Picture 1 (cartoon, rainbow, N blue to C red):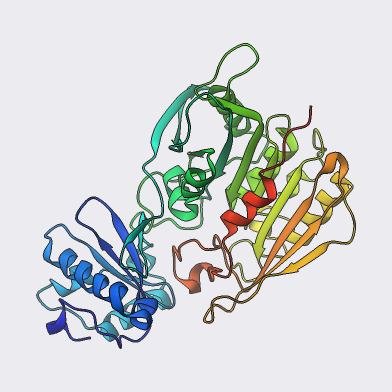
Picture 2 (spheres, rainbow, N blue to C red):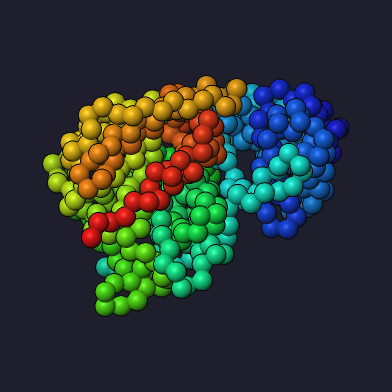
Length: 421
């Protein structure tokens, strides 16, 4: 694509995967470039139109993402005095990666719309409301979405999603978009902020890579008590026997999900807070070795979703982060729940041709209290949320799995699970 043709996108740009653009009405959208080229028609025409509008808008933004997950500020580039062509920008990015100059590597931008084949923009996520509570001298923030179907009369489920290190409640929304599922299924979705990230901690330290609040969840025995924070937050939102909550919540249908450090934290929640949580979903985060000597308050359904191509939290355990292997995690929960030793196995079809990941689901049923232990083993997936964004390049975090919708799958797994009487 030549710079002189900046007001339109060619159909032969090598390695271009996604186009991100502002829509002029406060939204930010993602378009699948390859699909738009293949489908043509309304999808391609609308992409061209939206692209040109975003470039013409002084405050508009256009980013390109290539097949390795690198993000390029194409709108800024084409407006520069000496713009680079696509090949030159890619060379610059690969040079920065080789040199370890991560400040030049742009994370994916949180989009809330996506371009459909018919040219319309579908909703991917919804505006969140911020809440807070005071605990142990700290202000703890959380962000939540209430579905349009909520009327306050009928109790609804409550789902939490806990972010990874260097992220936040808002970051977890952009990763998972579970609020879109909440709107569809009628539950309240909450994304809490972890405690402030200590200096020098975390995977990525460059502020330019991950701007805004950066936090973590404490699964140790000392330090800020995040377990107490979530327990108090559940009571605030759902109420207690002696006091009503902010919402009419079905206290038997409170679910925990989490990614990475947030997934590790979900294991701790399942062990220590199972009187308030019905089931836990742990994505890329296996169990912390410090949790293994403990005994859960009760049997509880656990779902683990991990990839064997994860370079951050390795399938076989990561000493630096104190995690055991995924296999050991599953074996521990099978023993605690007294499930079947042999699983039911479901292999998901390869629905996306250029996605080499493969999903196999192992369900260990008939556990005590009708519990299950479920493993989604995803060959070649990295430190990512299935169907989520390629939030950093593949050489840094591995691949995203696009073969199935994890959000829909886990909701089917947990939606009928309740805390026993």
